[in-house]
Image (tube, rainbow, N blue to C red; front, side, top):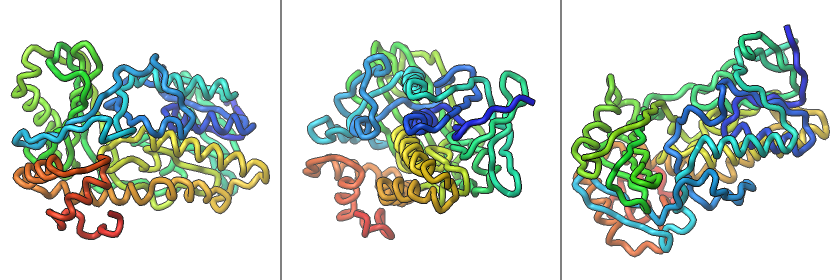
Length: 396
């Protein structure tokens, strides 16, 4: 069996994996990143929308090659058609881009390679390797050939379906209410506003989740839905999405040219995303915005944090759980309160009927909110609908 050796093996070449590989390699660690697919970033499994403000934080320069549309703002729509429209004057840097995701992912992988990381495509992790109770690498299948990659530490960046963390003994199971079933079509010849993303909420539209329209220019848009796992029966997401498209006149002459589906986690992160000789990043660590299901920025941040912490650990040669705990502190200090608040908000909003959602949207549309974000929206909602924020008032 062929054996490779390195300091760090990164499982998964999505945004979290590529950022981790980049920062590990920049720190002087010999890094191998593996990707089970034949092409980084494909097939698409994302709505492709991101806000702008965090890109600079992780050192990513906006590049026209992977920006498909630069949004002016967003519209939140209730079941009865009440709307709240916001543009950059209110949303600021929360207004974002619609990506060409496969090109974005490839750009991040390119940066990892520039930093010195090696990439192995068509290489899927099949298990972890333990010797004397210690993680010492992974088993994998590369182009059909069984191999071993021996490493001092493993970074699990293998997404929602992450098995590496579970194989390493980290509990990653999710409750059904912390899973969203998602389906998305890429629609062409749609009569939509090209400058605004749209989010439609309400139990009759998308129980426990929301429906989205993300324009991509020239009448093309990602139109998708996510619904809470407790509301899912056979084909529920498709049923709701098809009904919406069939009844919305903007899609009367439109057709789908691409379909994608999958699941996202909507919990506020694992209890602990590290153990001896292993770090979980991004979706594998369940670090994702529970109310939106957005995870690209969280993956990039946690990948960067992992690379920085491992660079420091390499100076002493200590990759124990205790030595890796600064990673836990980094991501929790930066994101934990917001993730928990949004998780609680997600749980409450899932219980609201359409009439209440109509009232909530009318309320916020008539409010003088200087900067629109989840925090400020919840502050307004708290005054009129205090039960929505019951249990997490101290975070608002």
